[in-house]
Length: 80
Image (cartoon, rainbow, N blue to C red; front, side, top):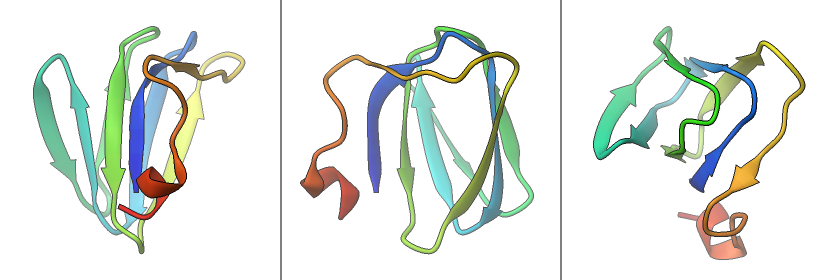
């Protein structure tokens, strides 16, 4: 699944429980597997690719919102 470029008002942490996630921001990509995590500062634009079997736990330090840069995911994005 591809989660298009977006940002959040709050700081966000992703913890990968199962599967693999590739997170990209500022032209850099990081692949994170089970037990791995990352921190996205508030308003940092990022995107993600998740394997079909992935399970990600997301925590935020304020109300959660999504500010899409190029529009929300399409049906095609959800099956990539």
